[in-house]
Image 1 (cartoon, rainbow, N blue to C red):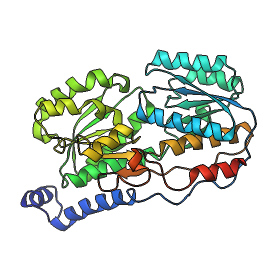
Image 2: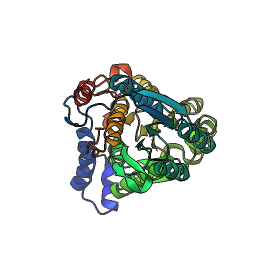
Image 3: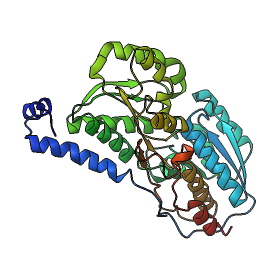
Image 4: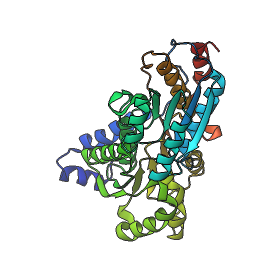
Length: 362
């Protein structure tokens, strides 16, 4: 039931109480559609058999990032299943490190290159060199596009629908706050996709009638050093009006909790943390323990690693991309136990390993 305060707020912006209640219930209904079980395979069932004896290099943006690491693990698992030599090079979280890692990949003259979390625009020069050398490339979170991105040299970019991820995170915060969230958004302008996600979060919150207190651009690679003092400063600036933190992935919240605890806040109090992406192991642990994170809109990282390998197999043989967009999952305390949750990952119980192995003839 709406409180008198919420009814007054609804009237103040020209909404009737029922309309205001509907806005909240509609937001939560949209979230709940993304929170159910993912136990039915909805991906490809046909494609080329495995190409034999291929060497593929994975250029990882930063293996300290739980999303990047999860996808790398999936690629290695799938690479073993398909029978390829898969090598992973860590870019270490810096522009220079990622450029150096791409250079190492090119020096190996691989059959294909996988960009794991690298922004295609940032590495445009290296991408052009790979295209000129006839080396096919598949990305994970490497552009805002879903699937083929020939303009940036990608046979396919594997991701969930980043805009739906962002909307789901914003809708949960809006509904959880009873229609009156005070949100701080955390993003990293180094990555084109990160800005697109953060912008959609802001648009969704404001369209619903919530408030964005601040839009914070701080590098993912520097979260360990920046987030503790930044959290303290934002608490001092906004106090109780800061109800929810919305970040483009979980890593921002890896380093926020100690500062909130030092300010005397309990793990289940505001500001509640909601991550629009990834679903790292540490995020699962925080949500399960009700300690400084309430939600992650998780991606099936291991499945996406398998999809990346399948898309590369298609690229190497001149086939079309699969057309598959993997599912997302809104993870809360109430549904954390299924689809891999007991292992602190979103790993759908839909038989994807067996499905891809059948396509490859393995």
